[in-house]
Length: 113
Image (cartoon, rainbow, N blue to C red):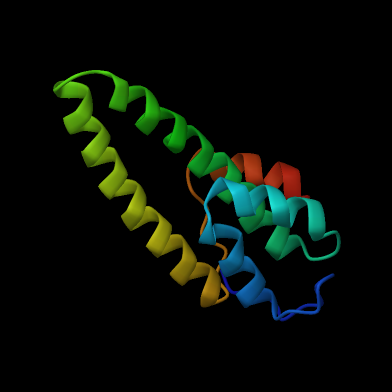
């Protein structure tokens, strides 16, 4: 789904601002949810970043505490998270609203889309 070029609170192009929602994972998701009040496209990506990367971050930490099998699973999950992170930044930069299965539903409710 292509996004319309819209106005943002910070005056940055919406595709750049949406990409920035993912740069530091859930941290920038929170920042842009707090800063962006007008643009629903950016708010969607900020909420999706928070909803996707906070649980993944917690899961990697918990698995990392478990010796051997947990370390291996943590490594695999970290690599998959890296791929998801790059993919979502690419989609946001292209101006697309790519909706993840569970996190995307949460993001739509939070952004008002």
